[in-house]
Length: 224
Ligand SMILES: *Cc1c(COP(=O)(O)O)cnc(C)c1O
Image 1 (tube, rainbow, N blue to C red):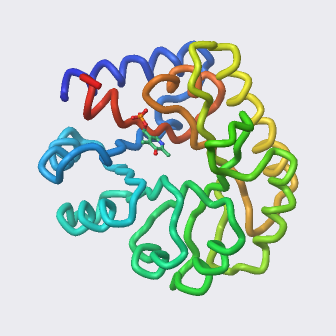
Image 2: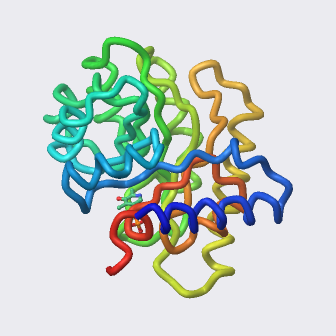
């Protein structure tokens, strides 16, 4: 795993260099959903301090087992309404906010404001979660009354395709949308960050401005 991590760091450095960005402006989130607690501990021992899970049970298990204050815990999948209560106060960043019902529940259950990314379905694939590009601003405006939700950025998943141009366009569109919302300077939605880029497309995502990349397969499970 260490060799893979070193290779990934090189790709991150190269992608940043290509577009004149700082490596320190890109946070690598290790997505540990495919692996055991033991493997997750190895990830932490490599020096990775940001861990991501997409299911409530896996998230709570890993957090309990790796009880280190310096870890930032990312919940990257959709939250189920009835599980919000159990999970939300354990989360440092929630990456998949796309429904008002969940926002209400988070606001009610969370004890202090939580950093959230609004998930946007830029590619329009029916299988993907997220608000549409057209609805994003309205959705963010609807979040204003929720004092325990702070919209720190936008998240997307690129389409499953070999077409690099199509992937790049999705990331570019999310960045434009982020810039637009950021410029409006909503107090509840500073919208500074871009959570985009996974194992197959993180180099492109970094070139297009990703601040948080979410890497599972390539880091923890390369044989898949
Ligand atoms: C699983 C998952 C990832 C990681 O995907 P890989 O392709 O394995 O890197 C990233 N983001 C979300 C939301 C996921 O569910």
